[in-house]
Length: 93
Image (tube, rainbow, N blue to C red; front, top):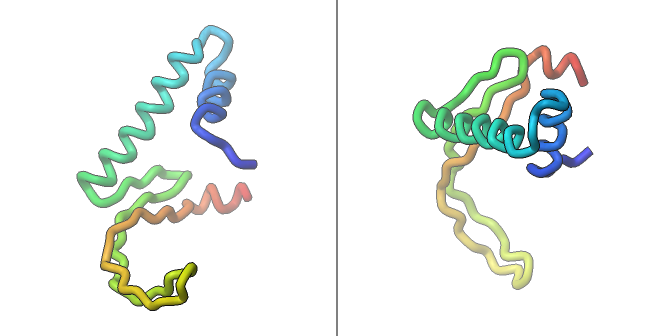
């Protein structure tokens, strides 16, 4: 199942009950996502016990291939975020 942001809002609204408006559920989703982004940016990672860890990792510079031309290109070093699921989350799969 693929879930976009709007669908996530609907699921959160249902989970919180009938008294919760769609706008309130949307604010809740935005608050969680914003907090995760801020935590990763400030401290380099966020750990949610029972769910998993979001962590900033450094990618090394490397050589790639342009798929249109087949030409070799240099890809600069960059930062990205990786997610490692927690043990409880893994067990639930």
